[in-house]
Length: 139
Image (cartoon, rainbow, N blue to C red):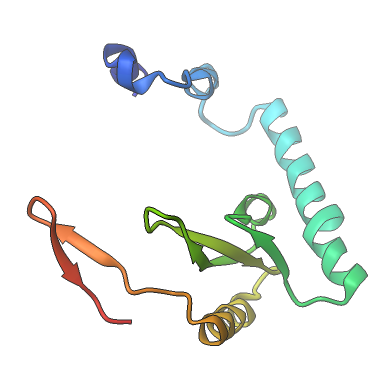
């Protein structure tokens, strides 16, 4: 991927590729001390000082994030579900994300479903095949 990006620099290197280069410089075994320290720190901050703290402090079942707030959930190793709450002028969905603690998937699915039923914002996607031919799906 690094070589491909350099070969197609005009299109591919708009934002650089520092993360790829830094990743390539590691052993790839995920056992470097720096990686393990960062992993432990991220888990602690995302779980104990993040999601778990918020749920306990406010007596909540889930945390609601605007847009795609799944980053903290993924750092904690916790489940998240994102549902549309609006659409841009171009028709792209804008969502909200429900995140819970470990093994809270059934609750998150119920919350997402209840939100979708209450708001009726969700639209069935349009799938495109063969040079733009649209296929309409049902909800």
